[in-house]
Image 1 (tube, rainbow, N blue to C red):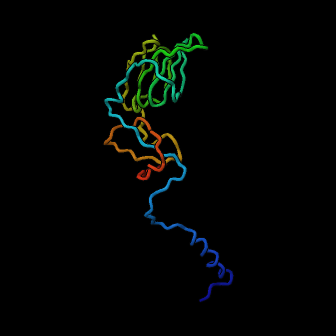
Image 2 (tube, helix red, strand yellow):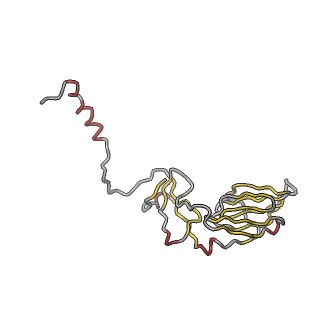
Image 3 (tube, one colour):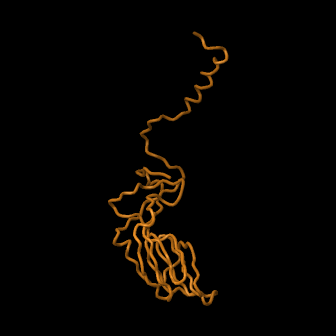
Amino acid sequence: MKPPPCLRWLPALLLPLLAACTPIFDDSPPTFGNRDAYRPVYATREILEKIEVLGPQPLRNPGKIYVRGSYLFINELSRGIHVLDNADPHNPRKLSFLRILGNVDIAAKGNYLYADNLTDLLAFDISDPTAAKLVKRVADVFPQHNYPPFTNVVFECVDPAKGLVVGWEKVNPAQAGGFECSR
């Protein structure tokens, strides 16, 4: 049986399209084009929960800012909170740094500063901003996302046996040959 005349041209049209398709099963190593690649940074629960007051640290990747009187609290993404005296706005003075791994957000109300510590919620008494004190930890308030906070990237899949993911380091895409996850 011959196809109707209106469909006789169909094979000629489809053949070039099928030839352009790539095989479904390709054993060649993955290529990621110009997409960024990331590797998880791990920490144990013990290290994660260790909150420290350190001397002033350089601002590298600042996030939110909270103002209380003449003091500034500046989130350093994934690392902690900078405390600055801003009495002279032309010459702010760095006072201290609250080291809080996995910290990406801060909020405040009255004499309390709230911060995330990966999955936990922390409350600090800042009635004396030069001596912030941790007063409460509420465990497992926030979900842990085991992927980088970026889209259109490839990343090394998380291995829970290595600890909790507290950050992501950018790596050369050429070194990401074994990466299987993408977002």
